[in-house]
Image 1 (cartoon, rainbow, N blue to C red):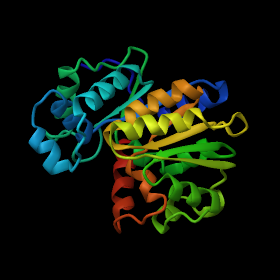
Image 2: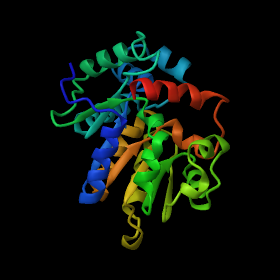
Image 3: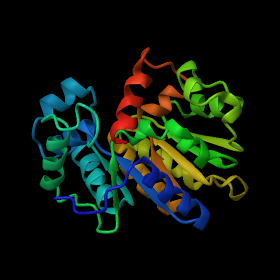
Image 4: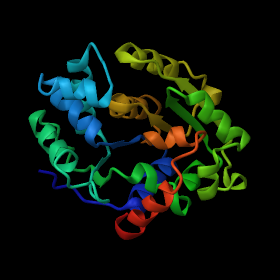
Length: 258
């Protein structure tokens, strides 16, 4: 189904860096089991699985799924399960591809195709830190205030400090936009993004928002003409410790396939 050029973590970083230099939009979205189930449930299938296993409850689920599908069609970098032991399990890569076909959510021809685990892989070899260096960073997340504080005060969690010692963190500003639950939360967040004063306009944005992240990434990139990166759970790990040994395991996948 996907015939676009595949890129590794370095290729993703290059695309985002070029957008930074050229001051143009570039939306990276990361899709996996949550997005697959959102798309299936948005058409009325497997809603029991979506609610019970993933724990999400959007009363306007079809609308959330439709926005997700539209964002996939517009994104500049679409990350899908490719590396790691779970990528080809039936409920991950295959189910996502089927869900995308169900919605005709086909990436545009010029979109790059990355790896879903890039949300973690960007933490290795300083890819993410290099993109954030000397930049004003917008953060859209339900814990955006904590992430912003961690970056500005260099008080990141111990698990992140292992990968990125605090002296290496050199953002010039961190602008938090708190994300509430449900579709109304997305509209509220985008209204706050639109209200950012010109003197504080961000250079780059990081998003962690579950099934709504793709829509927020694409829309924010268009609104501000900046690169926007979906980081998912990595944003939470900026201030909250990860499971002991998790980064070592993920780094093994990164070095083998990332």
